Amino acid sequence: MTLWEGLIRRYLFRKEAEDAHTATIRMLKWFQDNDMLGLLKFLFRSPYHDMPKELFGVGWQNPIGLAAGFDKQGEVLPALFALGVGSVEVGTITPEPQDGNERPRLFRYPEHHAAINRYGFNSEGVHAVLQNVTRTRREYAVHDYSVGFSVGKNKVTDDVRAVEDYLKVLRFVSRIIRKNDYVQINISSPNTPGLRDIFDHLDDFLARLMEGVGVIRGLDRVPFVLKVPPDSLTEMDYQHVVDAASTHGFVGIEATNTTTDPNIKSRYGLSEVGGLSGEPLRERSNGVLSYMREAARERGVDLVGVGGISSGEHVSEKRQFGANAVQLYTGLVFRGPILIHEALAEWRYQDAQGAYL
Image: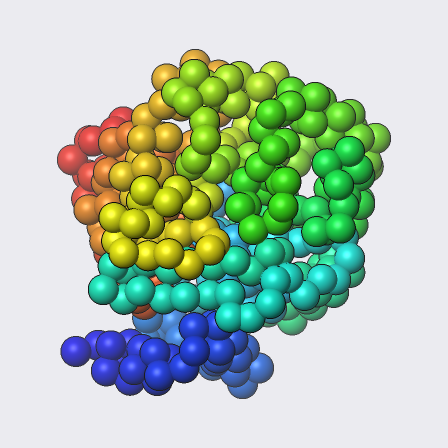
């Protein structure tokens, strides 16, 4: 039995789900604040962590990233990199602070390796989040590691003014962005009313967004990535998303965000309102990757597989369906840091076999 299984997981799973996440962040901050990152590496980091991967034109430490939502406020980047992930997404970041939806808003289902959340972009706001990122980078010398800035809008902002919210955040991001960083545009969360409706006029939204980006100093060479939903779009729609994203200068797509599909939820006896993540999402997420694979290859767009990864085998599935890299989140909640090692080991093994080259 590992340290994670025997002690840490038991401690965390005695707590309410969101309290457990808060405790995890505090635990990681303790390692940072007490100069214990070396111990964190000794206990948990995979020997395969150093497998450089170029994605979106920037350098990841390895092809196993951490999805947005884990370090929402940008507080524990050094500790997360010490665990061995190749990139970390901060956020989603909103222009102004907002509390998100009322608690309870996070629910764990260990028997399915699944979770449902309805956070609603709870964020300390762009000023606080970017101060956290700047401080931790300065204090812990993680300047060259790849950080993705996941950008969203405030709940009170309607669709007409949504672009301005994204640009407000990006004006501040432009001041601290580093050579291996990128921007992820999140218009696919199901927990902000109307957000996914932007896909109904995606071309117009992306055109207005990138027109605004064009006049922000410091963003001209920054890669932009779009995160897509797993629901409500057809195969042709997803191919159009690739075309639209590429046309407007996006170089990557993350597939996918969480699902609200009642059919998938009912299959597992789940009924909470919110986005479902974890293993029940895997098949749908893989399908979306397969829909976009050829169009992305033709357009030179990198695909990141997100959703349902709980083992090294699942990483191999993502690659089979076209992923150039993957991101973890819910699987880590249940498996702990050993999942990072398994994902890296599987990627290394597949590369050694010449697969997916």
